[in-house]
Amino acid sequence: MNADKIEKLEHLKSKIELLSKHHQLQILSVLSKNSCKINENKSGCYINISFLPDETIEKMEEYLHYIEDQEESLETVEYQKAEFKNAFFNEKEDKDNVTISYNSK
Image (cartoon, rainbow, N blue to C red; front, top):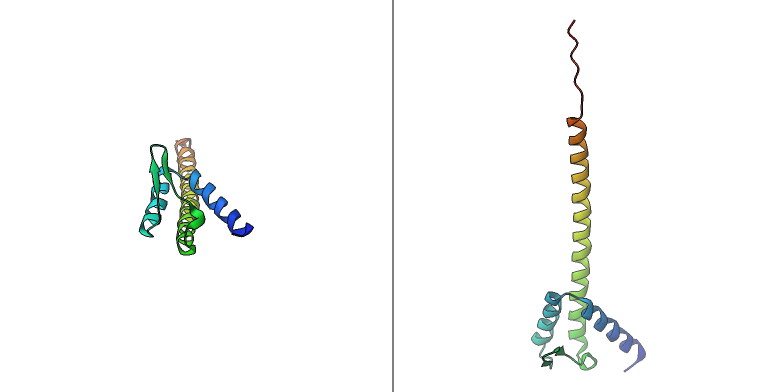
């Protein structure tokens, strides 16, 4: 195995380890659908990814890219939501603080 592939697999492994349990289970689902050998004990599931077919590794990478895209989209939506909230409430506060004076002439 060449150094580039080893580095790629180590990067993939570290990304998967940082995922939430839900996303790790989705990766496990990808592996089980591709008939990968999964060793499990009370500490968790273990997979020797160095023996995985390239197709399976690509599917795992696709899922990781999907997660990253979704997180970026959610961050954008949350930012826009905060901007709208700030604009709406700041505008509302300005309307509430308007002093109205009547001239009785």
